[in-house]
Length: 185
Image 1 (spheres, helix red, strand yellow):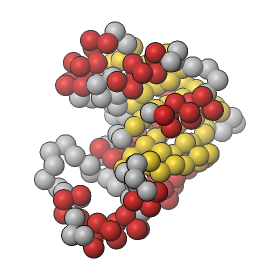
Image 2 (cartoon, rainbow, N blue to C red):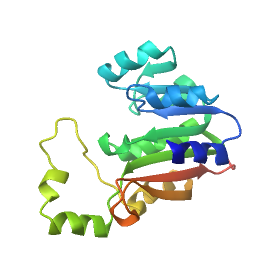
Image 3 (cartoon, rainbow, N blue to C red):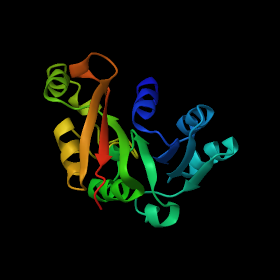
Image 4 (cartoon, rainbow, N blue to C red):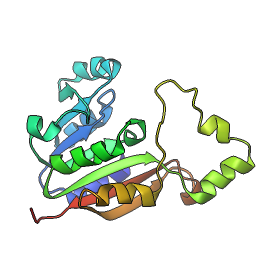
């Protein structure tokens, strides 16, 4: 969260955030304690049950729903370690774009997969464990910086920041892309 917090402080003047996939609500609670008004959706009944105890503006839902029609638009969309779990990344990106007000930013994180990391997994014999198909409800899509950027560019969002987080950069655990929606309608 330190990087996410710094990104929000640098890019979001109006402290309103919509979180897609809030899990147990820990990030929403943290941001609320920093003065942000967080609204969010989560498809998991288990996550909702945990988050419901926090008294936040969190709801059942996913990017399969018309979120902008239900909740309106926001200056910031936050989705941490979620996109790799969705069946339709294109629909996810469309929902992010429709939720963003003109000039708003989306902060999206997902596990990092680059050439050197994948090579290291192959050399060490850990590809099967890392990309396992046996993990119930696990990752179904894997992104590089390029593919994540292309996905959001198709929706008219431009990359304004990019970071690798955890471990050394080329073996990072996650990547964070920051995408801005243009001000032209």
